[in-house]
Image 1 (cartoon, rainbow, N blue to C red):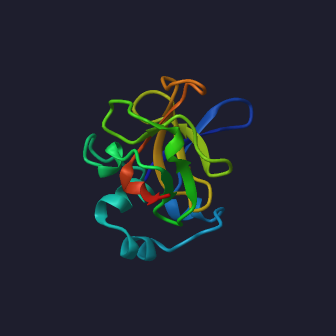
Image 2 (image 1 turned 120 degrees about the vertical axis):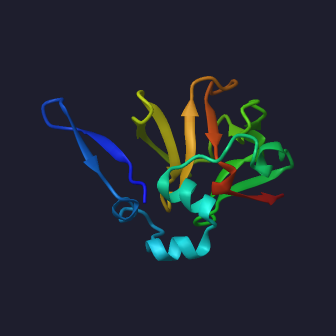
Length: 156
């Protein structure tokens, strides 16, 4: 099973590497499940994306081209996380939004791939959604580039 190594700022400004399992991270969330419970409720792809911080292939999510009025919920806990009002076609092949709903998501630095990106996840269950980039439209200038496997669309 894959585990991510997170760099944690140490006292004195240095950096130390630590491996933290998704089970340990889940301890601080309102909605928690065991690894077996997550695996039972998710497909292999959904588990890889949501619990192991994987990425679905570009252009494979049917949610990329959904522009109906409604709300996108976290597949892991059904929290409303993004509104269709904030969705736009980024041309990347992933569902993209310029902002999340209030109190819906949390972020953390992702230091994989030889740089630092901003990872976005559900604030209630910790499920990984994707990343936030600084190349989105006004008014925020942000692009929340999300994995459709992490989301469920509810039409208005």
